[in-house]
Length: 208
Image (cartoon, helix red, strand yellow):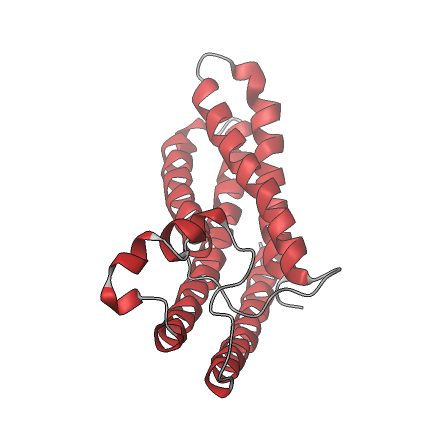
């Protein structure tokens, strides 16, 4: 238990320091936009989910407050900063929930069946936090500065996101099948560990 507390404290310290670094990066983006008279308002490539809302003909462009102008893009970058700060904060809470769910799940697998209700409640909370965290990144306004070619922590973060998203979906699907197919428990546990491991790695890689 002492090791778990030490790990959680260390993790939260890393996360807080990472948030401060990201806040500085957001300010740099805003300064770049304000300093340039001619600037590309939208990146050439960005997520499909972002294009639905923020593309040149996205849904948000139907509102005057979000017409594609340098002034409005400055506002959108500020919104992007808020989205990602909320994304990081909820990510921390999701990780904590995953740890708690893993501890309870381990006890449940070892015969402590009275914890089943708690495990299911934690699963609901983790799912809500996880998919809200993902939505904040998927639907945030796009940035302006294009990504550098080659390795970057952002690209690794996104690759890990594909793994933990698919693992989370698999975990939930397998959880619903356990009542009729208890032999699927090892697969459910493996999917849950993969989701947690890749999610935690994605959070850590973005801090450095």
